[in-house]
Image (cartoon, rainbow, N blue to C red; front, side):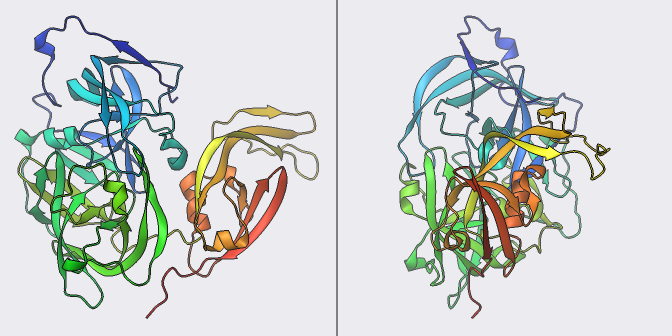
Length: 447
C-alpha cells in the first residue's frame, strides 16, 4: 500500500556522533545488496525508506542530492534539521524555494546512510506520478554512485550495490570498460556523434539515468553540431524548474566506446531551459534512459570507470511520439461494466487486478473506480491534433480496448504502435463520447 506523505519538521537537539556515519554502507561481510526496480518510460524506479517511511524514487545519476516532492497531507515523514534554500533545475521556470534537511536515515535493503542530506520541494505542481502512472516521491542518485560500485541490469531490472572493497573486476566477453569522468557530482563519458555530411564529431555527454529521452545535444554550429534540416518542435520533458522544449530530429548515429547505435533519436533543447545552471562547461549534451537501457552497466565513480555490455534492448528501434499527444493520470472516475453473460449468469472471472473500488448493483452491473487518463499535451500539426483531439480529452478506449485495463505506458505504446497504423481513439468531452481516427505518419521522410 502506497503511503501518502506529509512532513513533520523536527529539530534534533542531540544525536550521538557515533551513529552519524557519513555515506551509505553495507555490513562489513556483505559483498552487495540487490534491489529490484521498475523500468517505466526508460526510468529506474526504486524503493527507498526515509526515516522509517517507505517511498519511491527515480534513480537519477544527474542529481547531486536527494530531492523529495509530491508530498500530501495524510501520513508523515519526519524530516530533520530544516532550513530554507533556493534551488534551480532544468526548465523554463523561476528558481524555487525548497527546504534543506540534514541528518536523515536512508535505507535500501542492508544499504544504510544515517546522515543523509536532502532537499524538499513544496511546489504542489511538481508531480511526476501523473505521467508515470505510479506514485513517485523523489529523485536521488549521486550518493549511491559515490559510495558503491553500482551495477544496473536493465534486462533483469535489478540493481546491485557492490561494496567497493570486496568487488573484483573480471574479464568477460562482449564487455568494454571505458573512462568515466566525475565532475561536480555528475558523470560524463566521451562519445562520437555521426551527423549527415559532417565528419564524426567527438562529444562529452552527461550520463543521465533521470532522463527518459535518448540523446540531447546542444547546438554548436562551429563544431558541426547543427540541428538537422528535418526536425520538429516538441515538448522534451519537465524538470523541477518547468517544462523543457526544443527541436527533435535524428542523426546518423552515436557511438560510445566500440558500441554504435544507428539512426539515433536526438533532441536539441532550447538554451532557455538551461539558463539557471551556472555553466555547461565543455559538455555537449546528455545520454538518457532510451540509450542507457540498451546496456547492462557497472558504474565505478571512485576509479572513474564504466563497463558496458549490450543487452536485448540494443537493437530496438527508437520510439517517437507518432500520434503527437501526451497522456497523464488525472484522478479517478467510475465506470459501469455488466458482469453477466447473455443468459444472465455472472461471469466467473470478476477479480479486479487493479485494486480498484467496486460497487456491485442488483442488475448485475459493476461500478469500478479507475484512473482517469487525459490528454495533457498535444503537438501542433500532429496526426492527433489534425484529427481533432484536444488537451483535456478523457481517453476511454484505443482501437476498441478500454484503457482502464492497461497501465499508462501501455496505453501510450498502443497509441504510438508503428508508422502507418490507423488508430481509433474513443474520448469523452463535455459528457459526450466522441470517436477520432488518425494514421501514424513517419516523423522523417526517407532520403
